[in-house]
Amino acid sequence: MAVERRGAAIEIAGLRKEYVSVPGRVLALDDISLRIAPGEFVCIVGPSGCGKSTLLRILAGLDTQTGGTINVEAPGWAVANAMVFQESGLFPWMSVESNVGFGLMTRGVPAKEAAERIDAALKLVGLTKFRKHYPHQLSGGMRQRGAIARAFVTDPGMLLMDEPFAALDAQNRVILQAELLRIWEQTRKTVVYITHSIEEALLLGDRTVVMTAQPGRIKHIIDVPFPRPRDVLALAASAEFGRLKLDIWRVLEEEVTRARAEAEQ
Image 1 (spheres, helix red, strand yellow):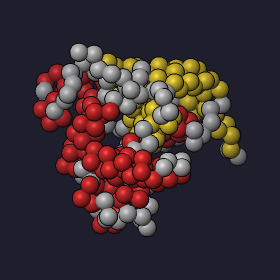
Image 2 (cartoon, one colour):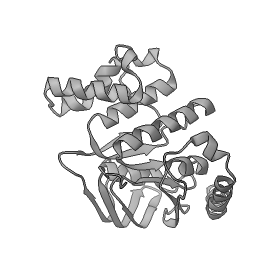
Image 3 (cartoon, rainbow, N blue to C red):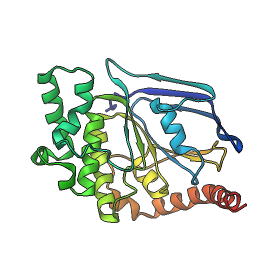
Image 4 (cartoon, rainbow, N blue to C red):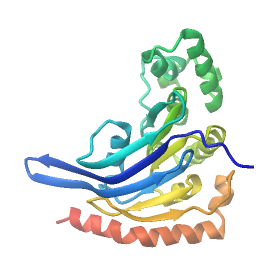
């Protein structure tokens, strides 16, 4: 049975980003072209400083490109995007439910509709019982679940995630990876996910995009062959997973080495 694709379609063509500063011009991104299908989960890996986060910020409208184009086609009234960072970014003076509903409030969504959306989002991430809690009363993993709920509650066309689980311990990271997969299976939003972990990219994504060292270019795109739904622990233990992880590392290794060498000059 075909799965309904409910997310945005993204078309990036010839994207270029250059920064001008006192030391001179820095080319961060060069000739990035990528098409992401509606409902696709795309992971991007690359060495530090390759422009992964810059690309995500441009997609989010938080930065502007120097050249090239981005076209996003989102269904219905869907908000163009929502972003989840490495730190949850929850407002410490707001309860969980107020944090989750903040985006709805700023968009003027009627109170009854907002309450229904907040209820659904909290249920989606398993935080219904903690709705009256404040961020300091939650674990790191629970705060990230709150951030994910806040992103999903606006019904975004695309979800942009910048290493959202990097600061968590290994056990919580596995739990949140499984939770994100479960939520994605239900919503089928388009996801662009930045990570330094090849393993995470293979566990979560439909495709893995490997970027070069600065200036960031697309070096290789790998179709992830593992069927869904996925059991993250069982998949990570499989021989095929290990082989593909090694193959991607071989592609990435040269760029990581080059980035370190240039940083030491």
